[in-house]
Image (cartoon, rainbow, N blue to C red):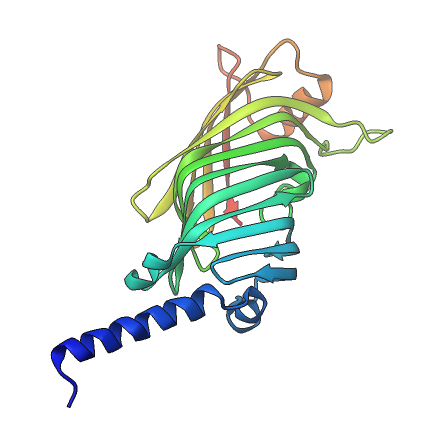
Length: 254
């Protein structure tokens, strides 16, 4: 009958063998077995712990030069985690992550790209410009954000007019900052403010778990605002107050 010391050596040897198997387990095999339906990778190489893929997509968002490195000790907590990075069509994304059965937590998320690239993930159809994301923490539950602490910067924002003009002219909206604060898990809350341009904007946004949103605030055109922009405000808002500010209120579902 094995002694306590013998059993310890057997356990140590089994653990070392398991660690070796996992460390050399091909990433291509792990991808075929474990990848969720929303993830697609092509040209997978390396190991499950440190791998790469030439091309891929997440929920329709195109990726290339995908690379990841997992942290083995996270398995002791019942999660997978590590660092991942990828190139976008005209930008990049990089983040630390941990993933359980239902929730994915991103830390130190940094990304930069153009708005049209994000159409598979966000309702930005008809919007053009640059977007940069910086999140200390972003939690997703079944692919939907439920907690957020960070900000999005929009630059050179342009939109198609409500009544398209001849020649396909776009309306310039300027630059904006969207700052997210932790809403305690019940809803995502954000403050929206302009960072220069034809509109003075101060608004708040709240999106709940049912994907319903409420946008409230004020907007005031600056002298640089185009005639098309002012016409759009006339259609979307009421009469301005004595200071020229117009109440802005939108509700709906994403």
